[in-house]
Image 1 (cartoon, rainbow, N blue to C red):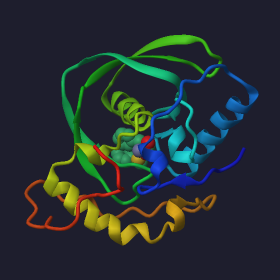
Image 2 (image 1 turned 180 degrees about the horizontal axis):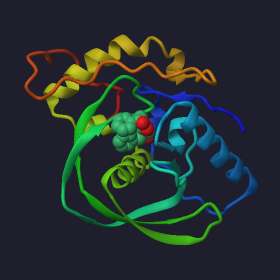
Image 3 (image 1 turned 45 degrees about the horizontal axis):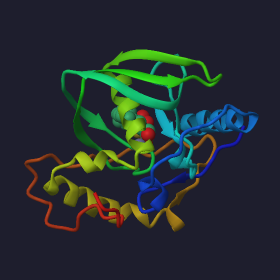
Image 4 (image 1 turned 90 degrees about the vertical axis):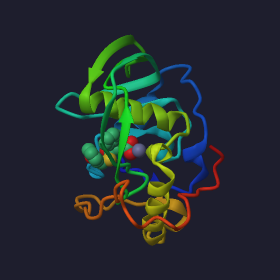
Length: 201
Ligand code: K1U
Ligand code: ZN
């Protein structure tokens, strides 16, 4: 299995729409295996194809012991609202609270091409929505208030230089540094640039 490079904020692929997967091939199975290996190496709980430079409508998720593959996913119903902190493997060191539906039903194909429907709540529901957003070119920072986006943009300016050509190369076995969180709504900071990757939203 290969550990793939992760594209970070500024790479245009993160803002592109994905393409429906027309058939399950051996090449796709290898991509799925590599995406799981990459997600685990990055200590994430999800990873969508655009984050590894691919345009297939596909994501892998592992919130608990059960790995989940969603191919051509559709969120068919939602209920409730919940706010919780999120991070993104494509925007390292930036965190923030996002309000989303608390419960969802997702319809997708599994890695064998078999259709399924899954009811999810809590962190699993949040992660599925975050990954489906990736497949639509949307990022969790898009939900931030203007003030918070500006603050996150300042923080990202300090980080982005670590990723030449917007590529994050993972070193196998190396622990991921954890530090700052995005400041809250009440922060006095925030008069900087917006989190600008050139995308129109
Ligand atoms: O798609 C990604 O960028 C992966 C992302 C998924 C995700 C995390 C948190 C909420 C929703 C979706 C991550 O795995 S970020 C790293 C992480 O493990 C994490 C960060 C904050 C809270 C919980 C987990
Ligand atoms: Zn993400």
